[in-house]
Amino acid sequence: MRISTRFFAAVSIAALSLFAGSAMAEGEKLIIGTEGAYPPFNNLESDGTLVGFDIDIAKALCEEMKVECEFVTQDWDGIIPALQAKKFDAIIASMSITPERLEKVDFSKKYYNTPPAIAVAKDSPIKTVEDLKGKVLGAQSSTTHSNYAEKHLADSELKLYPTADEYKLDLEGGRADAVIDDIVVLSEWVKSDAGSCCKILQPMPVDIEINGEGAGIAVRKGETALADKFTAAIAAIRANGKYKEINDKYFDFDVYGE
Image (cartoon, rainbow, N blue to C red; front, top):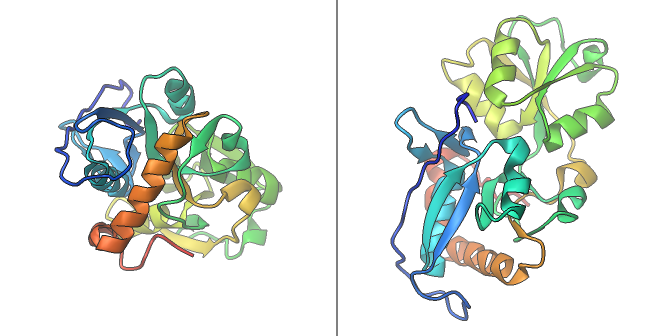
């Protein structure tokens, strides 16, 4: 989603471990939809390689389930309709489990859970959330973060963007006064050269109704057996240390949350 012309990126992985009780045949292929535009969770590099926490977790889950997985990139706004249209079998793209989305898809249990946060320019006069009144607040459209801003930061002027990259450019260029997103996404950005312009203002309290129970793996409505298999695989990689290995590659704390 960080490039104007989307294309498919496929990565196949070999199945290494038995998933007991799976209705899926050994070696069956699952098509996994992801955005490819949300570092450090999922990002499509210039050579077409998909990288990030979501991608590594997905590969580990597929290995645990003893299935082959192929990844397909999809613009965020159309990712649920594409799942419903059977363009892929599951979404692994940092999608929060929310009541609104549960009306459209089914989910596994969470595989991580982090709160939202606000970022501003380092020289910003904005010192508290109250200072956002009347200011331009950027957010990626069709996300829990844009919904959060509409409810809890209604005094600001909400500006929506197709991708996180675009709101970052506007914050850096002074066309937005602040932005809201996942605290990990913003923290990793402001620590990078690209985000050296900016800083975290503060984390925001989680609104369960909006932010949900964490990020889960979405499947088509009624395909609960597949969701349950992902849930069991999540528990398995948490237990066998694979989750920690992946977690520690990206973060210095347990992103799984409480």
